[in-house]
Amino acid sequence: MPTLCDFVESKERLSNVLVKTKLIYSSTFSDEFGNTIYIKPENLQRTGSFKIRGAYNKIFTLNDEEKKKGLIASSAGNHAQGVAFAAQKLGVKATIVMPRHTPLIKVEATAKYGAEIVLYGDVYDEAYAKAKELQEEKGYIFIHPFDDESVIAGQGTIALEILEEMPDVDIIVVPLGGGGLISGVAAAAKMKNPNIKIIGVEPEGAASALKSLKEGKVTELKESYTIADGAAVKRIGDINFEYIKKYVDEIITVSDYDLMESFLILVEKHKLIAENAGILSLAGLRKIKEKNKKIVSVLSGGNIDVLTISSMISKGLISRGRIFSFSVQLPDKPGQLQLVSDILTKLNANVVRLDHNQFKNLDRFHEVELRVTVETNGEDHIQRIIKEFSNYGYEIMRINV
Image (cartoon, rainbow, N blue to C red; front, side, top):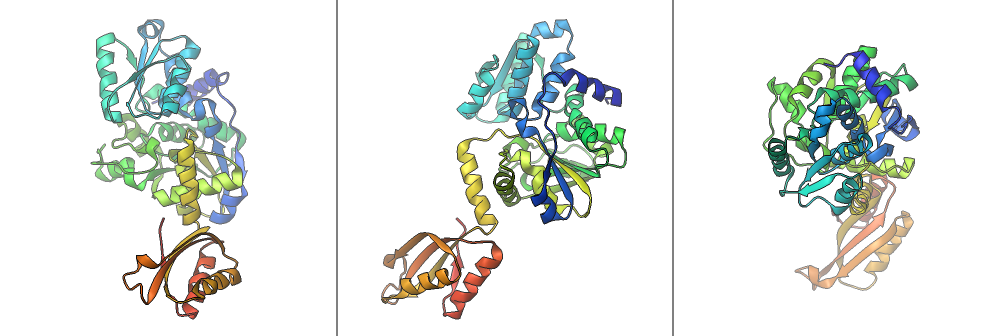
């Protein structure tokens, strides 16, 4: 395992490469969760994520003979860009194997750093197998995204930066996928101050670290299902498992709905964009039992496409009670739409969509179905709307869209 000196040396060699991602105080998250919350915005880092730290540190520490062999990595996202950027900076040839269906924007972003791109397979596992095949065939040096001591040492520089800015931090919350980031952050932080609590946050549908800890050994999940694709890892690294056992105090899991809500708050209140895996640590804040503590949440990356941003905002609005969709059965007679409009106006609910269709109800001679979407101000507002309709004898059916 790296020593504190190794982490410090890694920080020094990265100093001329990285963007300084200074801590951002969040009054919104602080007020909502009863702690003093700061964000470490690695989404603003070069290549859009923390991955450049480990990739650059690993490649820098290779000897000249290893560098001459060239590098190979497999990735559909942040690791690909980190390796490509670091290889270009250090003058080393790099080949990146990416799944065929990787979004074009990510392929182009990796290629612009000068890496040779090989598109292979339909999923990451197939791309990984191809990369290992090329490693054997060509003699390349494989750069693992997380299960590597030099990569871990690079990721741990985040903890040193946090402690420089905030020596009295109580808790550091870290996204957890394969385990490289939390291994480095936890080890470096604990070496500087053993009293700091380290909390990892995994997606509920891909909690490989939590399962491995419960089993007492590295255990592969049968499947992973989460919108946090960057953390959708079925099996954490063997090296990372040892770090997690030694240095991580707690692992919590969050749902996709938790991620959507946190994404909305981040965009609306901080004007920051992050990818789904990057906001795991923010989504986990609501599940931290401690109160009145000084907490740093590592926002690990921001590489997200525009269509996903749109979807996340829309679903976040619904999850936070800012958009409410419902259906109601109305008597098939004149004046009913006006009554609905009057109720919503009285409760200050702005209509954004309305569908009035006689033919959706089987008993169309007596009732018709009305579907309405309105802007609301949270769950309390929604409940007042439901109660008011009930007072008029109407039962509302909530629609999850």
